[in-house]
Length: 607
Image (cartoon, rainbow, N blue to C red; front, side, top):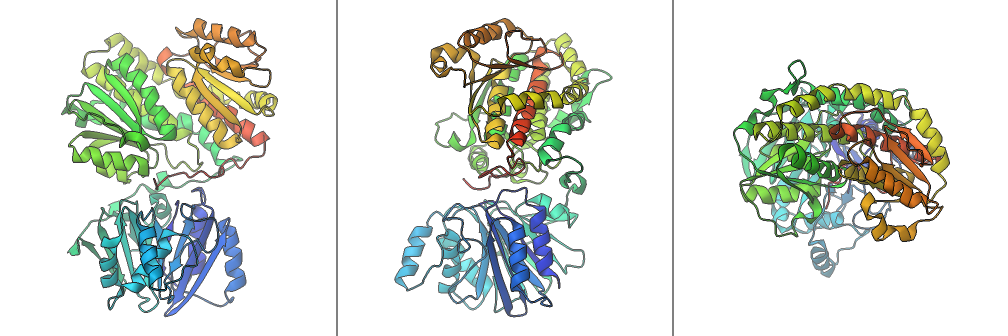
């Protein structure tokens, strides 16, 4: 479930709730809803589709002069039950006195539902969330707070809930266990806000409170208390970087295109305070936390695009730092019998810092006293708070669902780590170390040079848009880029693509080769150029169309995308962006919904 929810104490609750849901539309969702109230009068409105549908339904349902002082709202991404208004949040009890919104999954909901059915409770939908609303009613114990504290131990697995009651409209309860949630309020405490996304609150408040698992917020009479294991505690608010979290599209057709063109600046932000270009060295202060430890191995744990960043990182760590390196799919980590040792640094990569599949292995590693490191984009996110130390990628808010600039920021951060360990462990020559840092300084300008050819890449996309399937090929560093580019391509074009090592062609994939199966090959003029050229000839002989991405013109290719020349270690910064532009222009020419590809969420907060 991908969700946002709010509580507001304000006379314009309806319009504010809808306004802020619209601000968060970059998070994938399939339906939305809200409940608003004034005193004991509550109005529930739900709608399938865009928030604009909810707004229209609200206008048609509520009287023009009706005002409400409080409410909660939610965007849903279906996990239990189909995309229907019945399954949409908020959910309510049988007597319609308790309303809630919920994220994540209650694993024992079927068992709980069966017990409620025996007691003649009826269910209007198919969700696990509705079961909890009925449980609150069944276990009612004088007031909402006591009842919630009674029911929570019954629930298995993980959740974030927001509860309100018709009987006590001036109180609200928020509880968190595993699922991300952040809390903010106005200076006079006349308005309270809760959200699954820090970015949502960046538009409204400067300070937020992050709660830990098992903690509960109780609001009554414009004041709040926090409890942990049923005991009162105090927590301090933290400032959030408002500017970095706000995002506008400006004059670009899509957020994706804007974010692709932001990448030169993103790299400069990653460099800032971490690289001393004057002396061609890393800034020691940026890595001082690592100086206290000795590691001989590194394991990246990530999902999706971040996994590809980690995969690329394994090559850099092996080549530059001579460290044993591996990358693990976060969702598979718990199923493997991985030996945990003190010599390994476990690096968690996540744009949002809230990826559910990564949080679980992180908590497991913490229980084993393993050393953990974050590479995330969102300050205050769960992963950044649970790990021992780390580096923020400084990519700014990334609105487009499929990642571009966050990926570039991730791989740059990983490269800096590899350089740090290479120098620290005496595995990287001083000459090579300085050479890479000096060349890194020129990469933003070389990316700008590549971006200036965007129209030419669009012309190539015009030629390939009508094909239905594609191969993406690469070797060494470019293999991870081939996989990442293939992912981008299918995410937004909805065309089938498959990545594989160029050297694997002859082992099985040539069986698929025909004139309707073109290939994109990432082949910069590095030590593997001649091998890649042989792969081009191999498939060209079978009438396969080839799109070559290289700093050297490939005569035998059908189409060429030219990238600037750089060091072998740094080509991925250019080839990845070339792949992003191919994906973008192909999808745009096919009239796809680029910023909101179907069935995908920006931050996957459920397993």
